[in-house]
Image 1 (tube, one colour):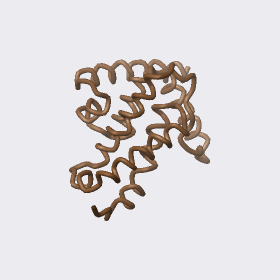
Image 2 (tube, helix red, strand yellow):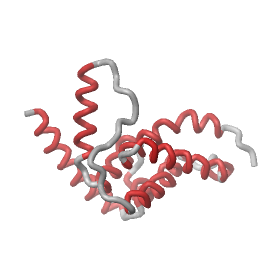
Image 3 (cartoon, one colour):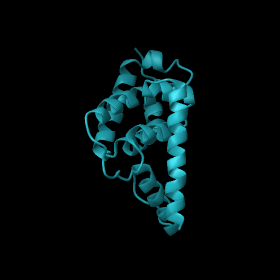
Image 4 (tube, helix red, strand yellow):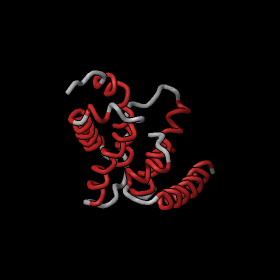
Length: 158
């Protein structure tokens, strides 16, 4: 089995998958572990994965399935770790902290749906596949999460 292109795939997608999982799991080290496991699985099936229309979507599905198993085993974290070093611009840092705080206030399922839909840029159908639920469930969960985030962000502005 050839692995041509796998190194490029990792270079392009590794950091974004790890960041998304950090937000979902609330733990940088666990996100790193799950990300590595997802890429290892992609490598084992690279001939099939590389032939897919959007192999990165498959990768998010695999990673989220693992993350969901982890989330089921524990109670909701009280805060989430930052996915990377903050920027040098004060406004960007304040926005980042506000978003991080707002995301941390979401239930794990809502946080996962928001991250997959907007950070990972997956379609509603792909999010449903990654979460193991119906598209309608994704839509209603996303709606509830966005309502909560609007309230949360509005309170921060006051």
